[in-house]
Image 1: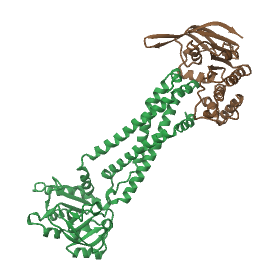
Image 2: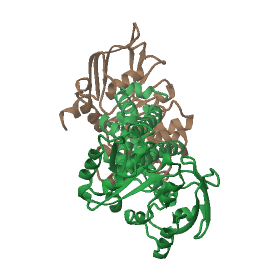
Image 3: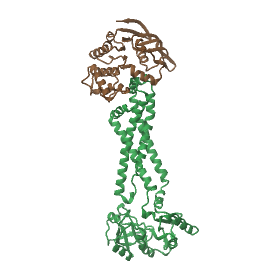
Image 4: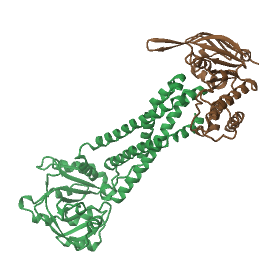
Length: 382
Length: 233
């Protein structure tokens, strides 16, 4: 068999355009598989950063759109293992217009607690003080400042949509840190502006734990505490909370795996068609080789080897593309694609898929070709 | 000299080959009795569809008879298992096709080397033997040429070199000049005659060209699957 490797390699050059196109089709499909694996990993297997692992998020058990009483915060803070609790109310609203470059997350929160809960955000002390002092101050992440074009001292007005209030704010602090595409303004400012019936509510509570070991217990205790209250809660890790947004689209896990399976299967059919064509064209040649004394086994290995080489070349190209593209997206668009890089285990998965495509596409035509009796093979004019 | 050396190169008794086509049975060979002595240049003639190629296929062991017995170099080849048959064929038989059937992605040297891959020879030995074979057929200066860079006559000479490079005792040639012009055909026939006369190879050649048949020292005619009169010359 080893001696036929040279012939296998030369066969790849027989119809260069077809070989290249087949390699590219496999590469594109495995690139998509790699990207899907990256999404899957980003959603379900991303190692939470140390700071994030220490945080839990409590929300209304029914839905994020349901609010909880603000006083839950002080009761949660009393639970053993809780270091601090902050109210985060998603303000939403519009800055200038709805163009993408003017969109950024906006939360109303307690200014004293923000940078204690989110310690990965670094802010100069004087800016922090200025932010705390100014009831209309807003702290924005450096990515927001860069993208929206804001500087310290800039005045901005948000148009409320969830809340019937248009806050007028002054940029008092610009913080930096991982995933700092975010902004916070004073919860008090919002509370005072709201009509009486809408005051005193929290969208979510973010809990900072003393130790990650307490996460499961504290989560259970919070939810147990409010189990029979008018607003029962659901407490989960920050990573799980983030994932719940994605899950609103449906069962993402099944969705991703279905697409990945469909992509690989479809390209296997395309490759199978190509391989069948390739083998059919070479049926007479297989008859010649058998006439010379070559047995079915080595010939089968030669045909399969050719398909495997094409598929592996496509697999390596696709994996490299997926790795590079996801890395580039993660670097360039960190706000949206943080953690979105192809995992290293994705490479062997893509290569295994490539092997499956190679074997799956070539096995049947190869077996049929080497089983054809010599006389019929020699008469073949395909 | 072993037992097989003293046996006739080919011995057939009651050799019959039938093909089934839907509900019809076509008899390609009908109870053929044939003896081809060792080291003969044997020519099998007959019109198209007379069964010449079928008989050659049975001698090469690439097809099995429906009934009857065929011994090639003393071996009852119809009884050999496929794997054994493949090994036997690679050692004992060289085969020349009408349409050359060279591998287009391999150059002349690599094409001739191909059957040697089934031997235990080192790469160096394989290359040396393939080069010698090509020199014998007058293509020592075309080693690196690919089939598309050769004329039909040159391609057939490469195919002949591929057929005898393993030093088989018998060379089967199926219409070896069928696709060639007169000059190239003569070159090819002279090479076959030299392999027979100078190297002691048994040549079994199928042709319907009387001029080609003149190179043989033994000729038989097939008509509708039956062997006709015997002739030597």
